[in-house]
Length: 211
Image 1 (cartoon, one colour):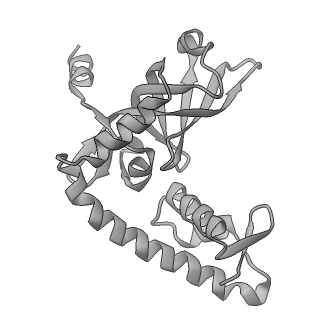
Image 2 (cartoon, helix red, strand yellow):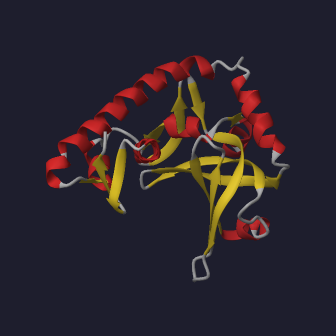
């Protein structure tokens, strides 16, 4: 009963997915404890985004995986067991409000949803403005987080440049070399470099420097 009461007291923080990807998963005895973001210890989140992908297993082990995108990043929603029936009607293309618990497994931070509720697409903008308006103490901590991201960007680019003589580098190698950094953040920054034309993919999973 005490654990249930503690769970109910956890605040569902309104965040951008990009902010979640900046957070540091805190692991206690090999189990995810909370996400550290600035001065916040985050267990539950309140997100608005678009369902851009859905995968439903038809094997013995039943689950549904969704991919949620809010313009700042993407995160997985993973549904198991009895909860599957609650979310079967949620499909790709919907704008939704998600309230759920953060989980971290196999180097991935994801959300185990309690609620997925369809919303009008205008609420994406409403939430964006709400978060940008300020007043949340978390915003004060983000500049420090961004300075870390700049350092990570530099490390990624340096590794890609150094690998030019070998014809590029695998993304997995970058993740292994920067093992102190979340793979989610590394993949996010590599995606930005690709979009900006700073690097290119000669084949899936391998990147080279364009400059």
